Amino acid sequence: MVTSWRRPVTICFLSWILSSPRTRAAEQFLDLLACPVFGGCSMQTVRDLKPGFSGAAPPSMAPDAYLQGNIRLTLEEPELWKSFHDIGTEMIITKPGRRMFPHCKVSLSGLIPCAKYILLVDMVPEDGYRYKWNKDKWEVAGKAEPQPPCRTYLHPDSPAPGSHWMKQTVSFLKLKLTNNTLDQHGHIILHSMHRYHPRFHLVQADDLFSVRWSVFQTFTFPETSFMAVTAYQNNKITKLKIDHNPFAKGFRDEGTNKKRRAIKSAASADKRAKVADTSISEEDSSTDLCRSSAYAGYEGDGAQAPKQSEDAAVKEERYSPWTSEREHAARTDSPTRGDPPDVYGTEQLVPALASYQPYRYHEYGKSPSPSSSTSSTTGSGRFESRVPDVATVPDHDSLKLSQHLHPGPQDHNGVLNMTMAPPTKPGVISHHIYGPYGPEQPLGQWSGPGAAQYPPPHHLTSDYATQAVHHSYHHGNVAEWSQYPLFSYSCW
DNA sequence: TCGGCTAGCACTTTTGAATTGG
DNA sequence: ACCAATTCAAAAGTGCTAGCCG
Image 1 (cartoon, rainbow, N blue to C red):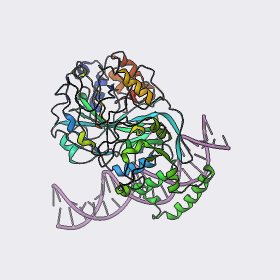
Image 2 (image 1 turned 90 degrees about the vertical axis):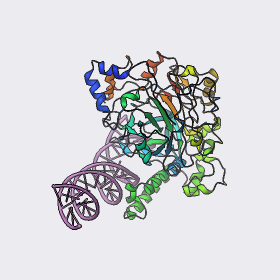
Image 3 (image 1 turned 135 degrees about the horizontal axis):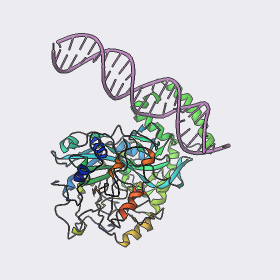
Image 4 (image 1 turned 60 degrees about the vertical axis):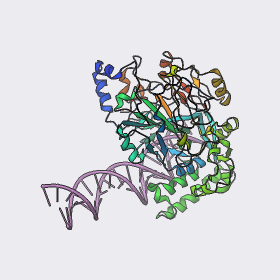
């Protein structure tokens, strides 16, 4: 049971902001408390690379620091997510903003009923590539474009007591994705033809002021990764969306728009025939998809409808629509393979060495990329656990291993690649939020959504690198990901 | 020429104000 | 006067498609 997430901090942000001459900025920050969507601060997340981490507590752990291990965040409708993920989830991004479908919906347990929590979501690049759709599968089309302004979506109920979060599922229905880098509505900005996955952050904090020095836990689910697109590429995804999204009911075959659909289908079939040399049936194209061992965690669950999941006898490797996934799979072997389906049963934050106290990072599960995701998504989905530790220097072997496993684009700012997850413990990421409001980053960044006010996403890495050598961490599979701050820049 | 993007379309669900009845 | 249920129009969300653009 969680007793306290609060940690002493050396910087009292509250007193700073109250004494700050930037009264307007302070006001804006106060306004932020009522803002359903915010970006604003950048957070320094540092990961302690622990490739050999087995889940056992280090000998000199701090006994009181990580008692929040009972907290569970469960992805709702995992079967739906998985049915999309098996094909290769695509999310439309538009200039005015588009909702996700399936939308992020989670349930929480293990919270202190009377303690207040803040729940956030952000999107992090899955890898460092840009993709293109070519003949029924995604192919790498080059290096990823520079990151758009990173934004974090704050659940409108935040902050709310644990009892509130636990009494019902928490939906991020109104979260919107956009490709408009000048967006002023606070939507999450993504690049088309790039892969992302959502991260859920849970912070015990009475208000957003407290976030600064609160421990937060980050949860990811591999089946929620998606390709941001401006138009659907995979017609199977289109079909799935139409079948499951009530707003698209008008496009269902049995709907009133049957005639229109029939005409459209014929036309699009013609069009597709021009693109693809061969016509592939649904089953055929399914098997044409890239094979991947990255989905070993899903084994026993059919690639098609969730109802087939009972067919546990089939233990084949999964087909992945992601070409790069296949490539990754060839050189990565998830340490979580063979995890018990109920990852939550083992969710326990493991205290780090006492010397790591200020900011610690462990990873229980995986790297966020599906390419390395293997654990079960049974029911509750899966998640990773990390405890940032800016004071920790990851061992070289970890780095080497990571680089060996993922020879893709590397960070050149001295940040470290995150290692593959340790073998036994998928879990939550637990961070200590690194204050974004140091002297080097005035609060003014909280205001003004104009694109010109968005500094390059990397700048924080550089800034904080001067404070601690290992302030940044790297995604195990990719470059760039680690440089994605939890809180970024203003969205209001 | 091609691939990605956008605006407008038809259709649906959701939302909230207005109305009605107890 | 109050409250709950119902109705209905507007708003919002959805995929489709033609056309634009680099």
